[in-house]
Image (cartoon, rainbow, N blue to C red; front, side):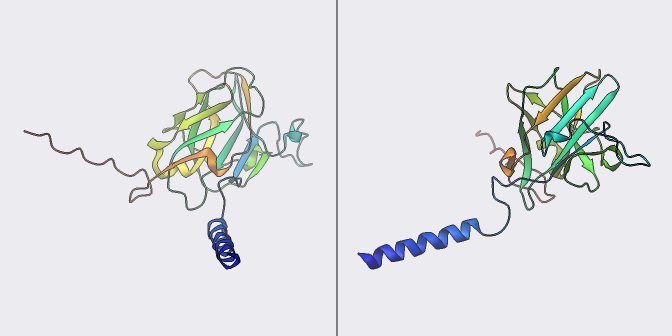
Length: 197
């Protein structure tokens, strides 16, 4: 009996080691950053940012003049096709958030409330409008293909609105993944069987 228990314990330990392994787990944080016009580089250094105590939280803020602060997130390395993203609010937003998920262009560095001059570019020609819930926002990214792996979250809409949204930093579980096609995008839907004659 003792021998059998020893074998079972050894087997369980091996299973945990294989599943845990190296690499990001589902609850590990993923690369995320934010950039704000409230923090500008100047010859004498950065101007004070009164909200810098928000730590690693991600902010998206819009004003009547457009984007004040935006954020970016990156899907876990080696992830399958990215189908969606859900972020939870740190606190209730002010105003009515209208947030688009747009493909980010080029590399960017993780970090909260970075200087505006260090921001990455993004392209909202193709975007996903977030669906706002009581405690979260969800974006359907299935139409963005491989571009969904690096996403900028920016104030959107035709009429700029003033709002502030503050999100918890995401873990890998924030992303909805699916099988990838040859180009790394969503796998094509299976063909329907021919109709019976």
